Length: 110
Image (cartoon, rainbow, N blue to C red):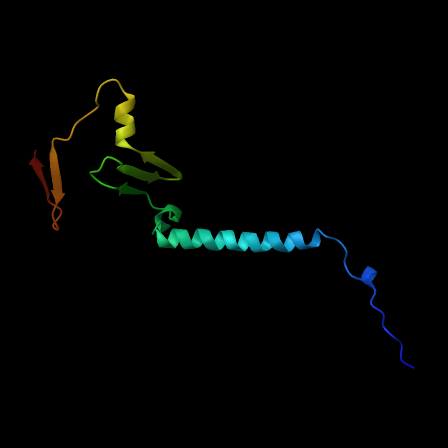
């Protein structure tokens, strides 16, 4: 004899929160993939290395930034913000320096 199987909705998992766990996992994988893509796109792999470094963004422009990493500490310096916060100017551009291929530095006054 064959038994008829009836659809029994009580046998299924009725917990509506069971889907949330899977959505959280998918969101975490997406977030990690996005971070890896951004780090690779903007060539910022130096931030995760053990070496000290200095990055100059927009050199010679008004929105120039100097980012340095010393050990585990990352410092950000914006010259325009630091000069405007003090009462007197801290310095001025007096020339340009160039480093040649052999390591020699040439200074050209303005």
